[in-house]
Length: 347
Image 1 (cartoon, rainbow, N blue to C red):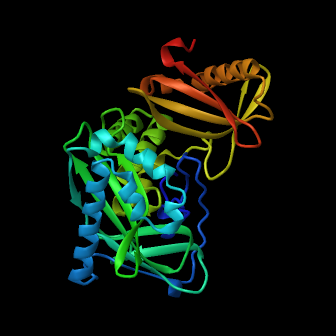
Image 2: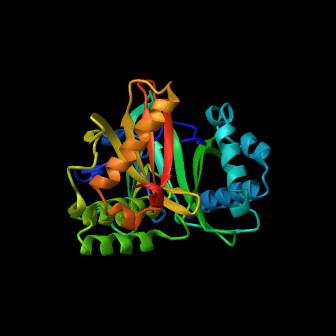
Image 3: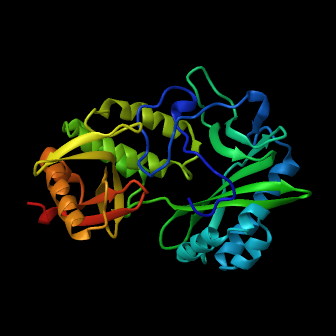
């Protein structure tokens, strides 16, 4: 994740109950809760008016700076650890300039996070707002951050509209003296292939009704991804989606770090991830698998192609839900080699 000033960790209903799958973006779960005395969180309703106003004003000011493409000023207002490695923020501002420029921003109620102690917290977990017997409520949120230095932080989410497509802009702020400095910058589209979370949720339900469980599972995954502005945050909305999606859990899709095997052409492929991804105007399905060596690209292309065909043979329902399949062979060092085939070309 570029554009961050400290390590973050994906969060889900693991903070309340055990989670049954992992979002396929290369981030590891397995949360270890830190001592509750080491971190506290205030929702907007809990904080004083002056603090809330300062956070909302700062968030809007940083948005306006980004909307003008002034990354130099953003860098001047960043915490040292982010300023020293600012390429991710610069790229995020540039990539989202069309959506930011000329748009208007609405700030959601912010959250104030306090991390105490003499050392960085390995796994800081913040439970913000009021929780009920069944977990989160409408105004609550959970944040999980790794290796968080002691300090006072804020998470502000802005809904950006008026550009070519709506996005959310999440700013992590850190208090330094009397100022709130930029600690993280996360711009994320609120839509995929022109559709929002509600559309993908309805499609997931439709696939489930037709007993296309694998399609439903992946569309729930996309709905969840679009329902939260950042991967280190969970809300009542995402928790409800996780609960609903549990009925589409299936052992033949990889989850929680476990692989599944798919055979093709006398070879067994150890598949580590299957997830949806927008490629151009299409929603494709990505399959990642372990490969001892990808240096021979001609051979790897053939293996990728064989796996794609085997995947669609195993899950023919994918033809109804995706425009194509991307196979990515990943070697032990983490390097990968990918191949895309349009669904119409998979025979």
